[in-house]
Image (cartoon, rainbow over all chains, first blue to last red; front, side, top):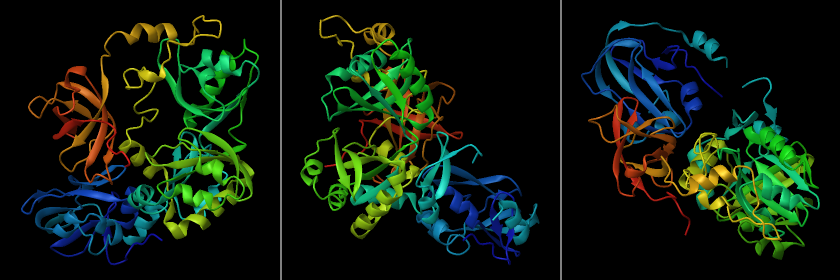
Length: 123
Length: 379
């Protein structure tokens, strides 16, 4: 029951992001499913300058921790306080209420389409 | 998942329930069926159903089975009454722990040894060798045996609903005791043991009857709140209960004393004629007993929200991250307590309850406090 909305861009590290600026960034259904129940998010503060492909946060689940990579370079303009308060939103609605950060884009890193990402995760 | 991972007799049931599978101890077993926090909470508040068919069953039988086990293990098994169980360990000559075990005495001359999945073959081989000079037979029965656990405050009422003629035997069963009973029409060994910190039962059945038993327990229990629960919930439950996991708190670099389990080492074992039982590891363990251990196992309460995990270094505080005073062996968010908890080996001088320390969580010091084990105890 994995899903890969076609209107989004993806990364090999299991992030999704929207094709606009500021872009909205989250983790994929596949990523949250592999992590299990997400209990804690560590996200970059508003104003942080990100470099595409670098580690910008942490996603903790009951069993493991996963790093959040930024698919774009740019400046963080908003973080999802709702998801920080209720990290389970990332499990229940990874493409909606469980989004993570919004970034004013200066440059986009390596990108996969929905079908390329689906091929990568083999579902 | 490797091609060689063994499958539980309940594998098809797990797949049908949508389980996420993981390899554990050479077996492909359910990690979780949905939410591991929900499975954990169900065991604390209602009941959970676990497939433990990966655990290793070894039968030791014969006129000298009891004295053979007294020689082979650190515990005093000949003192265990029929129908009772004992938590014990098998050690090397140097005192290191090969595995921790639960041993059930089924009859005067019949013992069921339950080993951890990944250690089953090495425990079996060691028992064969150590029992060879006794009139006792060691037989690996793991493949033909399935093990299913029902754990939680509703475990007894759910199990009893499937028992017809042996109800008193089941309800009267004491903790760490075992009795044969017919459950859902299946000849079962019912043990009041478990690894969750809750009341509960472990049911040994022939592998070919496992699906029938599993289905019956789900049908009887789900309306009361029972859920199937995977290894993820099993691990967080046992961590809250402060129970060791082989490969984390116990391994070949550990003696029972460091793990706070010195009580299982019975240096006072004697034969009926009064002579000392020279069990494997006795000399090494006797010499270690008097001297303070270099490290002790403690419970840590993480004061922030970032969990300390197995392998992370314990340090005094953020100012000296290079001075390592211990290592985390298990760590996870505690669903019951609402903050992360961890088990760690630390130097004795910082092991007192209330001591403030820190854990290096991926380069940042997270404050922790030594707290008394277990983290969770049922009322």
